[in-house]
Length: 92
Image (tube, rainbow, N blue to C red; front, side, top):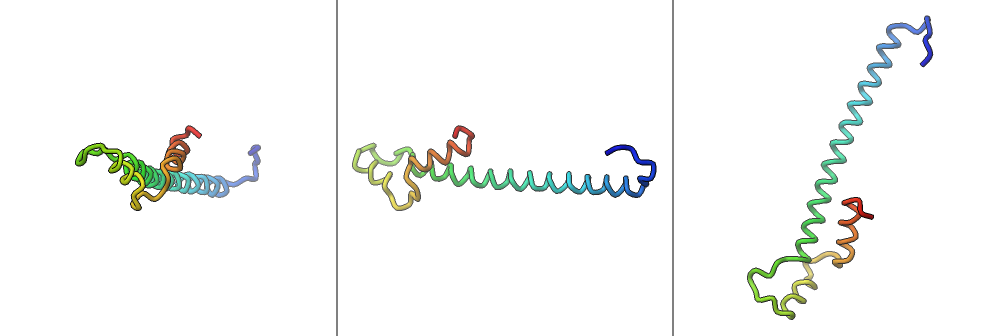
C-alpha cells in the first residue's frame, strides 16, 4: 500500500489485527486439514490391510485366500483402494 499521510495509526492497527486474525484462521484451517488427511490415511490403510492381510493363521491355500479377498468386510475393490492410496500419496 502506498504511503498516505492521512492514513492513521488506528487504521494501521486495524489492518494488522485483520492480518493477524487471517493468519490465525489459516493456521487453524491447516491443522484441520492435516487432521482430516490423517483420518483418511488411517481409513485407507485399514482398507489396504483388509485386502492384503497376511495369512498367519491359515495355510495360504488358494481357496481360503480367494474367500478372504472377496469377503463382505472389504468395502472396495483392491484396484480402487490402490488408486485412492496413490492419489493420497501424490502419485496421481
